[in-house]
Amino acid sequence: MNEALSIDNEEQAIKRYPQVVTRTMLVEEFKKLGLYKGITLLVHSSLSSLGWVSGGAVTVIQALMEVITDEGTLVMPTHTADYSDPAQWQLPEVPEEWWNTIRETMPAFDPACSPTRGMGKVAELFRTFPAVRRSYHPAVSFAAWGRDAKYITDEHSLNYGLGEQSPLARLYDLDCSVLLLGVGYDANTSFHLAEYRIPNREMRLESAPILDQGQRIWTSYSELNFQTELFMKLGAAFERSYPVTTQLIAASPCKLFKQRDCVDFGTDWLMNAAPSTIV
Image (cartoon, rainbow, N blue to C red; front, side, top):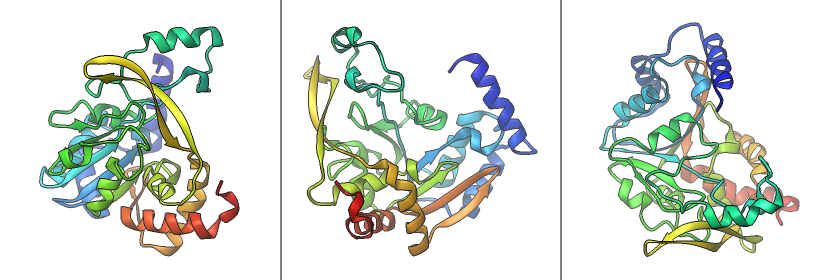
């Protein structure tokens, strides 16, 4: 992010909420929303949606950790869409004559240092916090802290990276909750797990640089042809059918719900409620 854009975002955040957002305030509001010691929580977030936070992303993460404690587990998506074939890039596109050079020179995905893309400031900082573990997937990794962090992040399959051998499925096993902090259902990755549970879905090949026995290789893997464009409509239908706690935290509209509810509902909705949209 360039400096001018960063300043513009801060100015908008200052105007969004009439007072400074502090860690103490966030802790109180998270508890009112329904977070508690020992919860397993998947968070999708927008820092700027809160207003101006004293301490920024650090404060948000520390407040979540204070409420959940290490007796619970805090999880965030740390996806890296730019670790992919440049021939498929759109934002931005790069000249075709660059493609081979990019494939030959792009560093292998490294969970310790590969930055997130499009995940927001909170998730990008969270992956660097002490005792946070990150799963190994070049495109759709997750980071976790707390009691079940190892269970959630270990054994992340390269193929079908948001399916049954992914952190999303392990979170389903643990009956986790999902917090949408200033973002919509289009950011709710758990709906992707529902997509995997639909039979006969269209698949595609992806490719990325990974480490294999210490050596960088460019490899291909199988992935679902996602339909994220349906998620806002799916989310609205989900809210009409299952309990979703909604609350403002500072200036940020938030939603808290059970992941199993949204995955089970999403699976049924995708199979039955909108059959014309399924490939």
